[in-house]
Length: 581
Image (cartoon, one colour):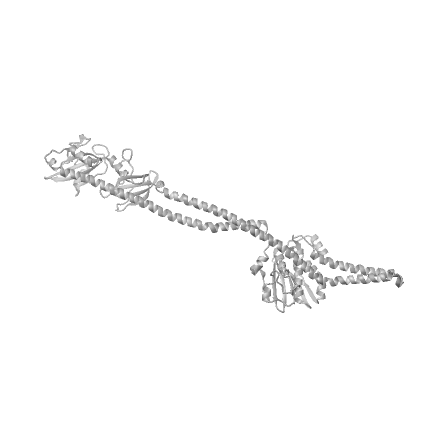
């Protein structure tokens, strides 16, 4: 037989959707908000993070390259400065050769000429080949006559192939920090050395004066990392700075000095074995990066707040529309239920009309006979025993008619919408008894195959009465004249089920697919509303149950209704059900 579960159709699920309470819509609203926020915020956050990382990388590279260019530019300036000082001394030594030979050198004029080239020259001295200072101009006259042959700078100058020397900062005989530039020149068999001291303070000011970042600090260190420029306001620093290996290219690294982090550029000089160090406080160097981060964070925060506001507003609006639609559907379902119930009552009224007419005919006949007995024209003697017998017949007919009308009204009257534990076997017997006369008139036999000790079900009895009545009406219409209807009950796994099986015409697969559609019917016009199965499915679903149908052409149809098992009920409920039976 063809089997059909109406849950498979989307249209069916929409038609049968249960009515929800406020808690359901509150959960739906929260769930919808979180899902929408996740859908909207995730791409925004991912794009922002990627952009932030890429922008930071690009900006860091730009800052590092800018610092490299500053260090490289400053290195070239310092190299040029030192080469010019060496060139000044060479020119002074060569052009003053005739004065040296004649022992008529004017050191004060020589110093004045050098200072005219650069104010950084502090003094100048002339040495013979023995290392003795023979002529001097400058503030330290006491140095004249001293022999520098054992000084490091003298040994380095005369021990190398080059003809000039730039020393590191040292104290020397004068006991104050300075560095010298010395050149040597052989003339007429003698080695002459001209040495000039460079004021380290002026040199330090020169090194710091040309860089382009206000918060940066520029200094010179030797290969051992010892500082060669004076730290403001005066004096040398004992700071030792780690320097990288000598390369032609500038290098940028992050370094820590005195507990503070700096972005530092290192550039080796070509004129001397010194390293130009340009360092900028890390917080100051990356200020544009932080500013961009704040701007991005602010923009993202504004976007997030805007999205949150829109999500809350739109989700409330959407859920509000769903809630209104749900209420409208509940109202429509109630209207359809009552419409179907009235239609069922109308169909049932035709079936019980014959049974009501019989007692009415008896009443009419007996009252007529009693009136004839009392009519003077017939001059009959009143027989009290006959009158009593006729009154008993009238009473019996009236009680029979009242029983029929009560059963009819039981299905037509309003009931509360709550559920209660109910014995399904008793409910099926009562429904079948209502249809008993109608089935007999149509020559339809019925069989009850009810499981003993069947657990109770948690249902609305009035609504389930309507479901059973609808299914019995469909079975009767499918059979027509002469057939069989079987009612079965069973239980298991916390469910209680009943089957209503008929030997009618059955349904085609196409009819089976549309069986639970509202207003769909296979009956003739005027004989069906098309609401019975749709309403029945909605009722069963609202009780937490399910309904399925098996059918095949020529073999009949079986409707199976499954309901949740209820907790045991007291005897009072069972007595009420027995009374309504």
